[in-house]
Amino acid sequence: MRLFAAIELPAHVRKAVLDLQSGLRSGVAGVRWVQPENLHLTLVFFGEVSDPERLSRCIGAAAYTGLDSLILEDVRGYPERRPRVIVIDVADDGGVLARLVAEVKRRTVDWPSDERPFRAHVTLGRVKNPGAVGHDDLRSSRPAGIEWKPEEFVLFESRLTNSGSVYRPIERYPLI
Ligand code: 2AM
Image 1: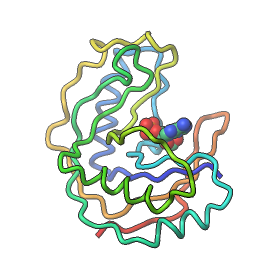
Image 2: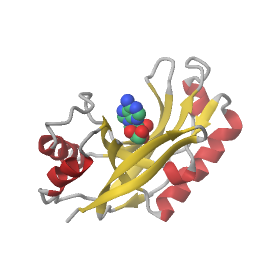
Image 3: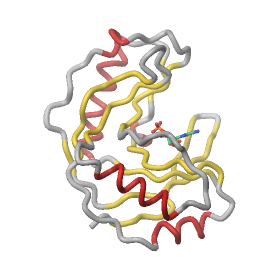
């Protein structure tokens, strides 16, 4: 089972992200835009896992605390040269999300996950031909004051189908 942990977006944040996405859609071609129901903030991507119940139990063995409000920031292309994905950054000034990610990874050392430093973001779209989208195409105003305080994070199953990825929640973990 292909698994990842993520934070879902509440309705008002999803709406702000969708508004932004539709603003970009009209000016930027050659992008596979993320479907509204698939928008999320990835914490840890585990990939193929043969024992999902054990992974889920290991995550659930800890209490996760101290998460503050998250705030939507600027749109950017990643990597900077020849972007392959278009994302919106999420403020993690106090490093609270990074600590949550580190704790989930510490609980799941038996399952290898992404080693790259965590950068909080919501992926808006994936560029079909890297190089086709430049930074000037992505100029958009930062959504004003869109914030939320997550109450949980979710372990999702990701299935790759002909019509795109389908995500299904497997387990939910409270943030207190
Ligand atoms: P992203 O949020 O940066 O797009 C589900 O596929 C989520 O897991 C995606 O949102 C994606 O990150 C993240 N992810 C990380 N590494 C991945 C990989 N190798 N393949 C697919 N998704 C990956």
